[in-house]
Image (cartoon, rainbow, N blue to C red; front, side, top):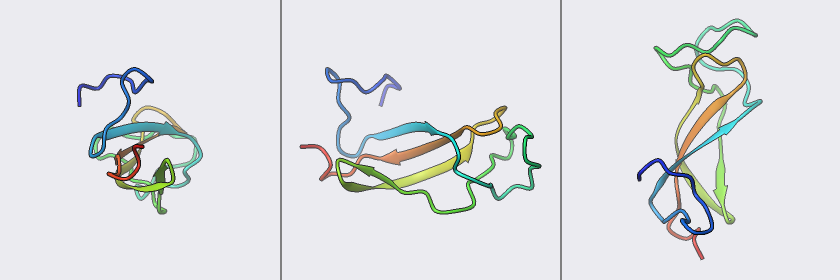
Length: 86
């Protein structure tokens, strides 16, 4: 909730929204030439499905977009599932 890193001392909580950064998620819905940076407006949404699991539980993916100004970095926002934290 405060944009701080998740650590052993400050673990994620059920319902919390987290962001991860990934590479290689493939094409986006915007017509962007390969090797061109992702735009900031509008954000380039990942074309295919993106799945996130947390401790074996499926998480709700809220957004998966090309990170603006990069060519192969994506930001994925997801909600920590209630049954993922043990």
